[in-house]
Amino acid sequence: MIDVQTGILAPVPALGRYLSFSTTPQGDLRSALLALSELADGQRMVVGLGESLVRALGRDIPGLHSFAGAVGPGLELPATPAALWCWLRGEDRGHLVHLTRAVQAAVGPVLALDQVIESFRHAMGRDLSGYEDGTENPTGDDAVAAAIVAGQGTGLDGGSFAAVQQWVHDFGRLEAMTPQAQDQTIGRRRSDNVELDDAPPSAHVKRTAQESFEPPAFLLRRSMPWAEGQRSGLVFVAFASSFHPFEAQLQRMIGAEDGITDAIFGFTRPVTGAYFWCPPLRNGRLDLRALGL
Image (cartoon, rainbow, N blue to C red; front, side, top):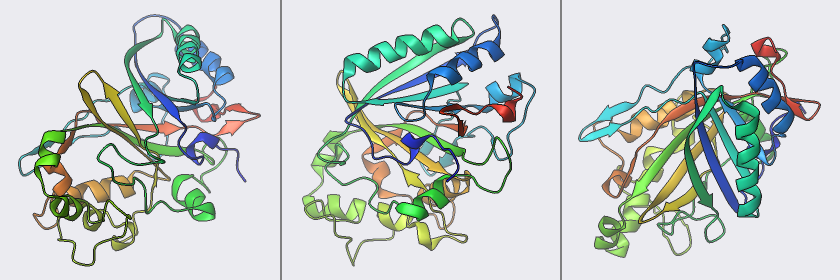
C-alpha cells in the first residue's frame, strides 16, 4: 500500500491534542516544514497543510481549497482557516505537551501557534451526548479507498484531505428533550446504537447517510470529544480523498437541498471550520515533494 500517515486510518487514541498555526512575516518557511517533516511520523502526529501555506510556497495541490463556511436557515457555520494543523495522538497527556513543544521549536518563529484543543476518547468511542460516533465509517480496503488519494502521481498518492470543525454542545438543550426526542434527533437509539426505522427526515443519520448521495459521500470520521472549563463538545475530523463527501453532507445538513435542517443543530453548533491537505509519507517522514521540498 502507498505510504500514508497511518494515524488517519488507525482508531482514535485515548488522548489527542489539536494544534492550529498561522504564518508569520518572518523566517524561512521551507526550512520550517523540512524540520517538521523530520519530526512528524504520521502515527503519533498527523499533519495537515492549509491552502495559505501551500500558496506561500508558490505551489498548488489539486483539490485543496479553503473552507468557505456555510449559511442555512438560522445557521452560520464559520470558516476559520489555518496554515498548519497537527493532530497529536497518544496515551499520556504529558507526552503530548512535550511533543507540542517540539513542534513549536521545529516551525517557530515562521508559524505561530494560535489554538490548542485537548481531546479524549469517551466511553469506547462515544460523543459526550452519549451517542456512538462514526457508526457508518468504512473499514478495511473501503476505508483506504474513501480516505486516501490514489492515481494522482508522486507526492500526492497516499495523501488525504481533512475537514475539521470544533463543535460546542449545549447540554441544557439536549437534556431538556425527552429520551425519545434525543433518539429522534440522532436517528439512533442511544442504548444500543440501532438506527430507528421511523427516524424523521431531520435526523442526523438521515441527513448524512453516505450511500444516499450521488456520487456516494464516503468519508472516514476520526472525531474526538473535547472539554475546556465549562465548555465541551466534539472536534469533528473527517478524512477523504476529496472534499466532496464532506461538502455534500454539510449542504444537506443545512437544508440546501430540501429546506430541512439537521436536528443536531438544536443542541450543538460548530465554532470553527477549516480544510487541510495531509501529505503522504516517504521513508517514515512527511513527503513534501509536491511542494518542491
